Image (cartoon, rainbow, N blue to C red):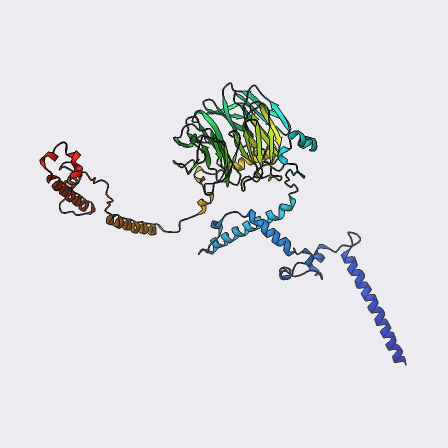
Length: 594
């Protein structure tokens, strides 16, 4: 009985001890997880040496799978992979092949992984692009091309409605205009000598001057701190204060200007028809070509491959590179002189207009026409927006077509009548739904919904760029400057290499030369052009060649000369069979009887 009571007491004591121990451990663990004061926290050495129940080893961390709530659904992964394709850089030439060096192979694989990760990160960051592109939509029997700018201003917000305005500058028109790459600054050039740069968003005037001579075209250089003007005789460069910096006398009587931002080259054409490329950083002329097709008034730069397109008076468009003496390609676009030209930012489509009253769309990849549009008057200005809208200015009218590059549309997207003026220049504002129109009475700014790219890349073009950022971007662009030799129709061609060795090339060329000679020999042709088929007199070139060569040397040229002499001898024998009346100075009139 005592033993049973003792056993029961021991069991009760054990149960109490177990209950108390578990509570003590629970309280101790709770105190470790959430210390009440800083003094209750364990020492740093204790935290580093004491193993925790939730801590895993280094190998277990890699082997552990992510929780189910953090895994991306298959739909999101597929969407990300699909969106990453448009951010891929490089074509088929970017595919790495196996190399012998392990270090080189590792570096190639690492670069490939970096490109794939960058494309995937760019696709994931699309969720941060909060702005969407929207177009003007009509309801019922309404048509978008019947909406006027006054009607749009009544239904727009104050900021957007303020972008519809007119600048009355009737004394110095017609005007050429050019917007900066970030779309913030506007450059105006009046034909009667008026130059002005404006921050058109804030309405602040940068500089204004009158050069007192004809100004045919203007363009910004690498940023808004410098601009060039095609004046009566030469091209002049001015800074943001309006002070003259340079006079480029190699550009004689210029009519159109273009700037290559990645190569820092200023291109021009003019009344002499000459196409000139000049480096604005060094001042050297890197290319000067004469097409020989008369004066040219149209010049555009392809933003994809930096090839310069020049329109001529005979209806052709020639493509030029600084280091190529001949045009890269020639296209017969119109039956009359080319009046205007525009190229989209992908470098795929080109739009041209001529005096024949046609606006044609071309595929530059295969140099074939896609479709054309007819205007009541020849279009004097063309431009293509970042979203693919095509604008044409003809007389006092401005017409904008939507989806006009890939397909042919019957009706325009928007139209606008500017009474009493004649349009001379058009340009869409980058990263904004605005179209600038230069005409004989000044400047008109029109709102075209859906024309501009809604989201901008601050590393490419930042509309809110500060002075410090502008200086840094200028230094980086100078360090990344490309050589003029890199300009070609296919910009990826520089990454292609000929895998054949020099000896293999020589062997293949020798085999091709022998095959061509054997074929020409069968056809009766000779590769030697120095020995002419000349049968007048006995002192022929073949006999002179035989006299100069040694008698004991027999080569290909000597054999050809012997055959030529034998043929001349046979011809003389045939001529001796003619009657006496057919010989002499008048024998040439009896060729039919020989």
